[in-house]
Image (cartoon, rainbow, N blue to C red; front, side, top):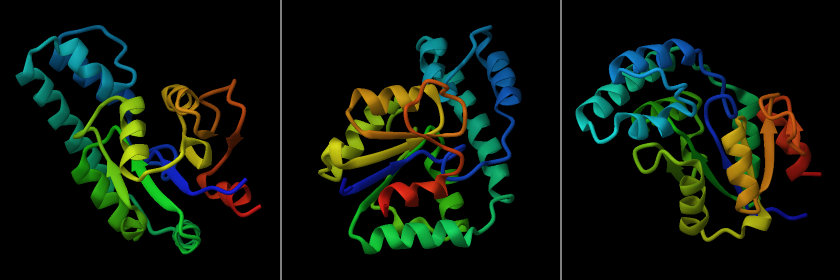
Length: 194
């Protein structure tokens, strides 16, 4: 199969960030005064906040501060750089979808030295819904889902990718029923360049 596009998630997929999401969820629960499980975190905040925009903004601000703290731990990965460079040289379009804020996402990609390989970056600032993020990326980059790889690491990534007919690959073991799984993002080279 010939692929024309690659869409990837950020944390847990492209890079593993040292963020304690359970600790953050606990703090956000206190901010929103709820016992909700808050998964996925960014997606559930507006629903749990129920129109209380101040609390919603407070929760997102706290999360962004934690995301920015993680930036200092990001290190350049020569293999990741080489892979994305080769993908771009094959004229594939590359997009990133993430439930993180744009500011932290941009800093992470720059620290990895891969920011310039991305044709599009879709963050929670545009949408906190993975399905909507993917639809936006597909439309904006004029991609055919059947010729586009989507790499994520969570059940909502898998569900959204499959729903849209993307060639969906899951990194890690968070989605036991996923048909296509890899241990590390770098392994997509075996699929793209087979």
